[in-house]
Length: 294
Ligand code: SF4
Image (cartoon, rainbow, N blue to C red; front, side, top):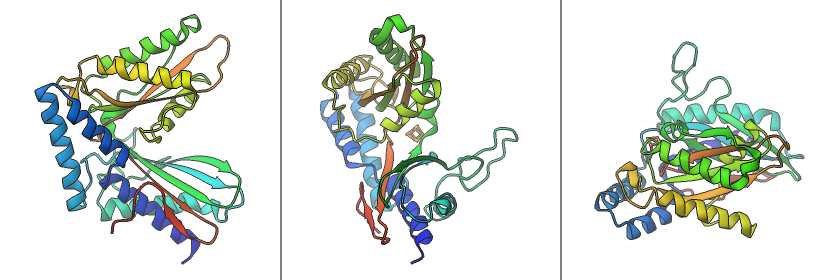
């Protein structure tokens, strides 16, 4: 098969995997939340979410009607061929996926309010590029729900407040968000760099499995502390009360300017959809997060 067509097909397949099948780590965390939830209403909500996940898989339909904004993360080997054609292949795959899966058309021109109808438009699907050694192409898609996107927040902490200020910033954001991001949520947190850098890092941490904690024990401890604190807010599943408000917390950071302490919280909803694949130089495809089930 023509290599560019392979990229298009893989982009289509990861999109389809992502919107129908939640990753195992997310399903396991929801099941654990259900087993441990003590609020009757919270438990009912988690049961409905788990039933919904099962139904989506059985009927091969998206797990949520909001199939999100489509964001790709490409790790491109510096020696990989046809890198200049990847954007076009991803756009074609997005159009096909919108028609065939189908996906809800979620790309609107901010000036005219007109929906493009096929999930494409200026900068959308958005592609985050990373150049790495080698000749493989690793592709990850995140389809990001609007409700959880609406409460993502970036800000500046007083540098003197440091980590204490960061904790307050995050928990204030969780309380203010309440039911809006369809809890239980996953929190991607980042600090440093700059306003744009911290948000970009925060969102990228949402790609990490929930079973993966920060390799730095101090940061892993902070992830745990924020996880505990967020689950003490009582917001609970779908904001109806309970102790399962977040499923996990990931933290990343960049060095900061001495006068600035940028911080960002990226929320993901329970429909935390992501899927990855790797294409090697010979065109062999390996699906990394899901088995191809069709
Ligand atoms: S925020 Fe997530 S769970 Fe809620 S409607 Fe949007 S995609 Fe669905």
